[in-house]
Image 1 (cartoon, rainbow, N blue to C red):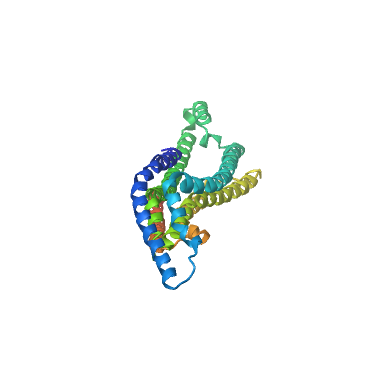
Image 2: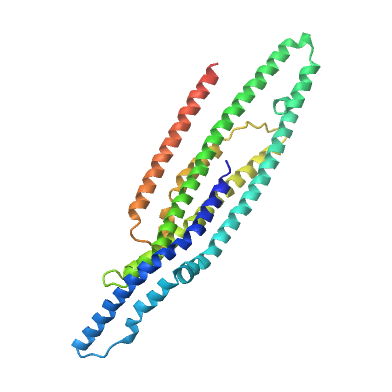
Amino acid sequence: MNFDNLHQILANLYQDMIPLCSNMIGVAKGLAGLGALFYVAYRVWQALSRAEPIDVFPLLRPFAIGLCIMFFPTIVLGTINAVMSPIVKGTNGILESQTLDLKAYQQQKDQLEYEARVREGKAWLVDDEVYDQKMKDLGITDTPEIICMWGERLWYDIKAWFREVIRDFFELLFNASALVIDTIRTFFLVVLAILGPIAFAFSIYDGFQTTLTQWLARYISVYLWLPISDIFSSVLARIQVLMLQQDIALLQDPNYIPDGSNGVYIVFLIIGIIGYFTIPTVAGWVIQAGGMGGYTGAVNKTASKAGGIAGGVAGSVAGNVGGRLLGK
């Protein structure tokens, strides 16, 4: 499953849904016009009743908001997206650079592990051609050695298969967590964009003035989920690079024999699964958006439960299968 394509589909979905906010502009203009009438009439009447001069500047607020409503996709969404887009591109560039380094170090590590097996004299454990050739070279008198090699190769393949299954399972959960956050982010942005003109119209009415600033804060906060997610993934990728560099340094020692364990890698995958669900909290630290505390708390609670379930499943599967393998 290619998760990059799914993330690209969500990005295209957002772009396709943005024009739908035009359907709300007509309703928003009606609400804004009525609100502007009450807003101006109340303040003019208040100034006349007190025999005070009319301050014209505050009366321009509903007209400025009305202008934003009329050209909402261009003035509001276009401006915010244009300002935030360089942030997304910058963090994505950081992630891509770390990912490229990770792939290069992983290839180097695989090659060094193969060379270590060759130095050990057990290249037939990891190379099918060497294994088949060695089996052909052995005769009928070498039956005990053949059985011993076959058993050792079978045990090595079983352990490698088990590690690969556990690794694929947690990589799937890791990628699924990132996809869940991206899907929720896209849904929130689409809802805020489509209903944005209505929020702007209500902000003209007395008692709803904070609606405008809250909408802006929430939109920017949700928009930052993707850059924060890229930064978090970059940190995890950098940790893996440092781990690979340490493994490579050990493999360059002629006396070192690799064990093929990837337990630390799985631990960091579990950390990543839990960490992805804390992204809304971190975004709230950058841009304080009121009204999202309940959702953030629910996400963090879900993250802790998911971490407990993931750890429990990993321990149960590893203990059960490992116990059976050792028992045999």
